[in-house]
Image (cartoon, rainbow, N blue to C red; front, side, top):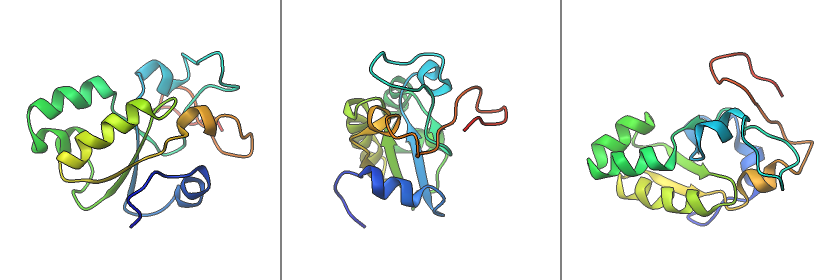
Length: 133
């Protein structure tokens, strides 16, 4: 496994990979596409991402590794790739995830980079509802 940051090309090629967990650590509004930065051409999230806001992750971190793992809901052997809007929040999240025992990496380009390529899939709306791509 590579320990460095994740590129857009790598992530795009691995979206459907078994054992990979994609974690969106932005706000719930950003995740659903209800809030979007003016610099992003489209709202939404990367398909298949789980949402755990950075504030929730920090709160769980105070409870220890078991609390973080319960919140993330991924097998401890899973590789977790975290992303946010620009890679800053997800860089912090990776530290919490690693401390909880996950093999975690940061997608530095995050939504800011992903949203610029119309060929890359995106979802928006309530994650419990059918996705829009």
